[in-house]
Image (cartoon, rainbow, N blue to C red; front, top):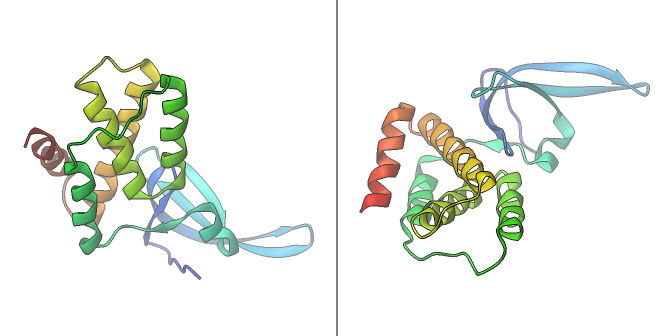
Length: 162
């Protein structure tokens, strides 16, 4: 079972990197339950996650150094992995990937939308999703690499211009 302590960084699906700012207990239906109190770094939003359901909701540790290369490999892939479907069906597929909380899935969404943007105009929803995916990647990689977000953004730009 996943264990986080106060001060640890964790990733919450579709919200990004959060800091565990507390572990609270609440009585719900006569039972005492423990909750992780998360503060999302990007928005300062607070999220309560039941400790015993943390894995179920997709809470996970920040990617490790050895997994960063895998993310970059996904981003470097020049092939466009988008079939000829309507934008709203494509949007739903991308949204499902973002909701998984997997950085690898988010990287695929970012790569595919970035590559698609080079061949056609993205819908408003797709542009927002591209920004969301980029923010999720930049935040997590900057925390994982102990680097600034600006440096990570420059690395991503270099990857796509190579």
